[in-house]
Length: 43
Image (cartoon, rainbow, N blue to C red; front, side, top):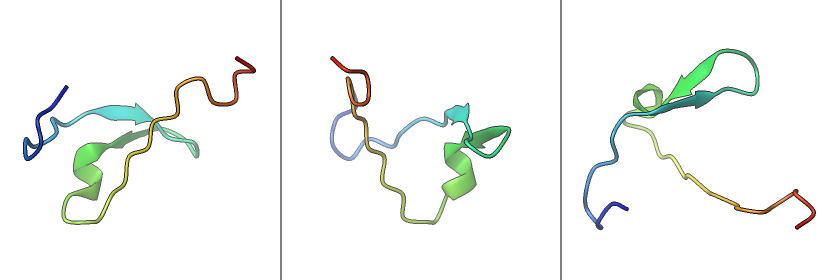
């Protein structure tokens, strides 16, 4: 867990179009990360 004001470390995730998306790809842009645990799982 990061504390408020702590920069997020770079990471990469699979991209829905192909390849991977890296956090650094969005440097200087507004980015919203939303996590939805249990969404779309039927649980």
